[in-house]
Length: 255
Image (cartoon, rainbow, N blue to C red; front, side, top):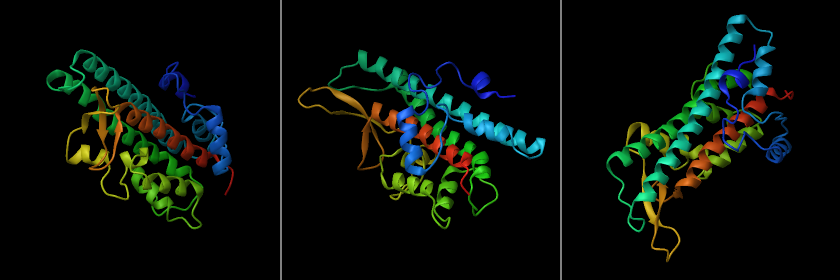
């Protein structure tokens, strides 16, 4: 039984941005010679899994991984919305030329932002458990539970597929969604730092001089930062696009 649209996705799981818009899907399909058919992540892969010539146990395993990862995408998006709302509530009541974030406001905002980043990576890690089984390439390992390991091993496929180049290019950009949740060429990702080293690097800075108002920003490393809203949109929309590009690669008819 198909469950994603009934048991996982609400009417608008990603707000007014429901998956990949048609014009973006067309561009991705042409660039990577893929065939993304559906707007919501997982629906094409759901059809593929339910029609596999595999044991009932194997189909159940792959389908469970798919539903879990898609639900995590929804929870990720919810966390991002809660983070933006919590920060706006704080900002509307603080002195905007020198915001002082502390106490309950800091706990709420940091909770949602850190959850958002960790869930983004977790969604891709869980998805890797099924995606690696359906990719049309011979990979180094028989089992994957790490998104970082999967994209590293995709780069070792010979000849190198376009999907590997897609991820390599993103990893070169320290402000990309891939660099936020996966090791970048410059070192540890923000996700890894949150898990092992620090708390969420939210700060305030004057972005539109001479407004004298400071706005929320996120430090990605010692040199790079993004305005909070840009950070949120870069990560959540990028994760969904990346998921769907991998999904399309799984569903591709090419060898």
